Length: 232
Image (cartoon, rainbow, N blue to C red; front, side):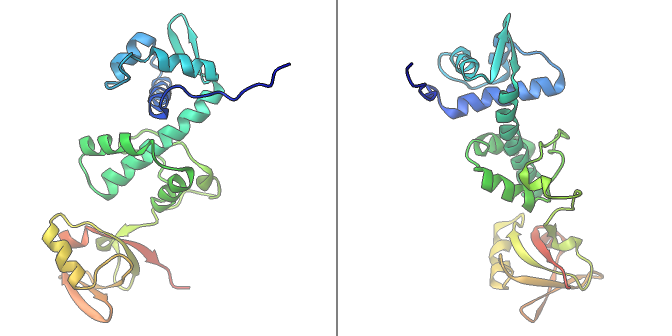
């Protein structure tokens, strides 16, 4: 009896993951998908179409093909949910934190979903506070980091403008709408790692950084993201 050889991939992982993600989405919405409709829903694909990709997924035991209808197997769903999770977490990061347009967000998420390792994916999920849905309102499959929580928690980051006087946090991201303001904030010491304390909210926002008080416009404060520091 010959030793069984491991399955050798013939096609790029990106192509396989694109099909798995599309099948997950179609089953999620209850819309059947076939080889014919697959080519129309995934706009960019291999030069020879999606038939070869689908055949490999069938051989891997991730997809079944019944009279041209495609369906994920249990093993296929396990693979697909990880791709979907990475994509939707990336959407939250780009759209809700970086405030990029949905068009830009979708393009960037489609690219990065194939690059994130499990460790990085869990780090992003924890950074975002384990969001339950993406910007489109679709559920984000939970990961191992989510199962360690007894309940949903609020985001682990917040904007400076959302603090109340007396609260403080460590800067994790500075993303003003205008680049020149980024240089100004850097000169003032508002950089990733700096600890800011909100001293006053009205009539103008006043923040303390390195024993210096700064008055900032609300628009600027909206682009400064912090990890809140809790006093024990």
